[in-house]
Length: 269
Image (cartoon, rainbow, N blue to C red; front, side, top):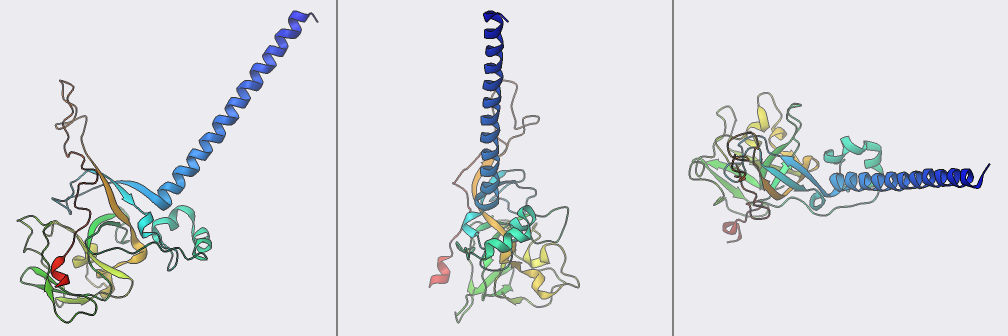
């Protein structure tokens, strides 16, 4: 074998080794990225697209949002349904041996929940109104609250409601009574579009023959709180990419400037 042939074979081997080395590095980096994305989506943040008008005019149909899961991360109690289906109950049980509890939902937070009422629509976006131990009363199409430990009911001033919805919070006619005590480790949530929202008032779909606890959302079924709003535009229809190349948003992104939480100063008096 000539020196020329030997040099050619050596160059071929070097090229193959170089290609294999680059492929291994790429595969390593790709796996690291996948693992990072997996843990970010399971434990930190995850994207959703809103389907429906139950939160109008605070949030709009088809808007893209980013949900903060870390703030409500809780392995200290029951299995968290928001991650059980993804990484398995056995893994959750191992995590529960380490009591991780960041914090709980706050009154006024806009949250994504999983009430397990409809397999075709698993997730809902609602606002947390009443906390464990609170007593709710519906009166004259308004909502009243007696905080846990308080003596009197206070009418909530819900400034995030539109004029069409303010003073129009009703209970379905088939619901018995107008007053509810929120059990421990559960929450009462409602949509801002009070005239078109399936929420705690209707047990999210239908309260017929349902247990009284069907009105409330379990702590373990709260996925996270809404963090960022990215708006929405449809490139293939009106409000999308126009012929002149200008982008007109159907719903302009608001990022952090959206009513993701609310305060109720009337409760502090």
